[in-house]
Length: 169
Image (tube, rainbow, N blue to C red; front, side, top):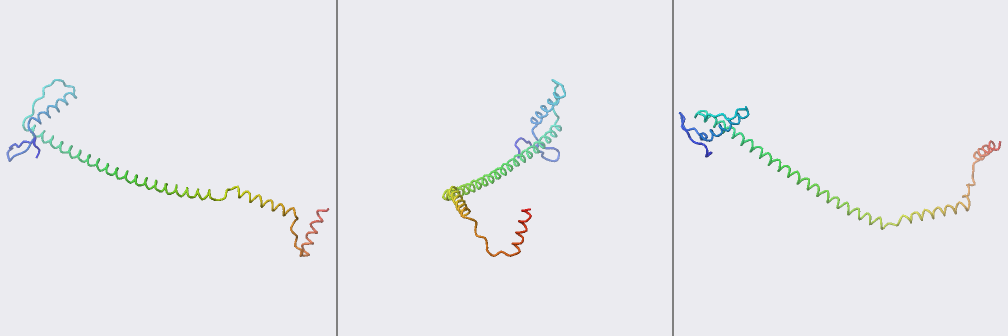
């Protein structure tokens, strides 16, 4: 039970309410603020009667309850959001670690491939072989054209002689 509440007997039984001093202070601050906002300075604020003080205390207690429940909800939502954010960051961290491991494996594979490439014959050897092949071809071409086949058909001879005649004319 809230310690600032006092039990009062009202007609049909005991009713808990805020002490008169708390409601009077709240009333005085509230009224003074309202008067200053409206432009009245230095006016005397009359104290509340017992019934108005009880009503004001109940209203104040209700508003405080709503405020506390709303504040509690905000705090709980903030904690929930922080837990969700922390979980999300852990997942991202795990993903980054997996990516780093994969990059490490790829780097090792790249080093192995680079070692294989360095062990292969240098590209100059390939160019040297191509130059030798060109020299052999040149020597073969200089020796003479390859012998033509001896058996040619008569139709090929006729067509070749026809091609020569228009060229001579």
